[in-house]
Image (cartoon, rainbow, N blue to C red; front, side):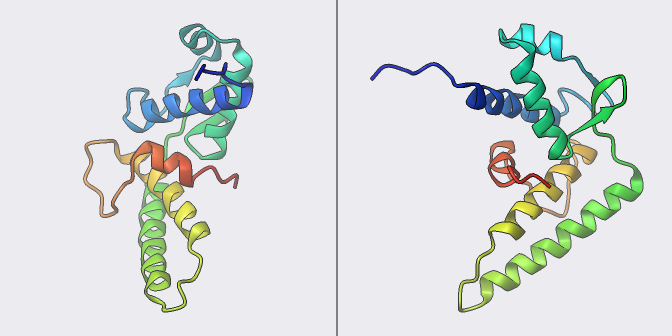
Length: 149
């Protein structure tokens, strides 16, 4: 079976995954500027798929657009961290209630929102910080957080 060349959409997703891993592991710490030209050269692609990947991460809340400056890794304030903790707690409670119901109700949206909240909390606290939420892997966050808010 021969490998097919990556399509632009899958290239964008692959780049977003790599950047997400770096951001969530704090290889690229909060507040860091993201240079699309440098990343394009590193990945051996044009700037277009890098910019599309950056837009995806912006929608997930991992990057923040800075007017006339590009994008930076999101830095959360203490109030936003507290809000993310509370949101994770409330969503985890709601998920456990939904899953305990005998009718096996759909939990997809709640799971996605929980993953997004966990990713934001993980971004703020860093990879070595102990949190009261069980953080899923960056790959799992991407699968669940592919939701555009």
